[in-house]
Image 1 (cartoon, rainbow, N blue to C red):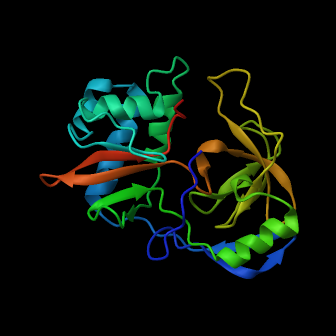
Image 2 (cartoon, rainbow, N blue to C red):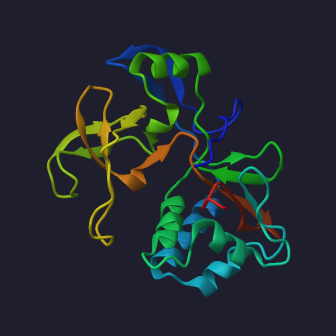
Image 3 (cartoon, rainbow, N blue to C red):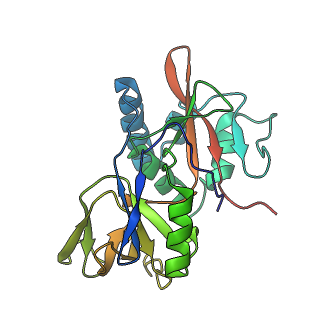
Length: 241
């Protein structure tokens, strides 16, 4: 997974306090991209992903100059944008995971402008973290930042078991939560994927994987072309040999 440096200027505006409660850092705030046309575009993307409509998706991706960044730009400049996006997220995976990735991004309201490419906005917006506080958290809990994530919105349900109908034991605020190492995908790929997490209150429970963004996770990037939003690039994606 690509580890991305948090932006010092824009983004989800997660400000971590120096105090730790039970070994967890407290975070507050969020910063969605306040553009009605962007919201409409995301809603359309969600519909396209739900129906696995590749033809419609093609129209939502830039035809040329698509970028796919890992340690370098992996996009093939001789192929259309949809082909590069499909390869980046494994859109043709038999288990439908590529379409699930797109569906997850469609629900993400935050985005931040790329300092390298003005006019291009990548989502989700990187959390704003205090590096010294994050280091203190890692040392105090003997964990790696890759083990932590944050809810895409406040009020995410924490369930007693890895099923959507199980009792809700807690609701998450805008706090960092640790994803526990025994997290595993469901045996049935058609069932929702739940993460086993430890919450700031010290409890453990299960949350829908679509509701948690990892620190340094993949990002999808958007830009406007002739006044209309398009998918312009991807940061991270399928590992390449």
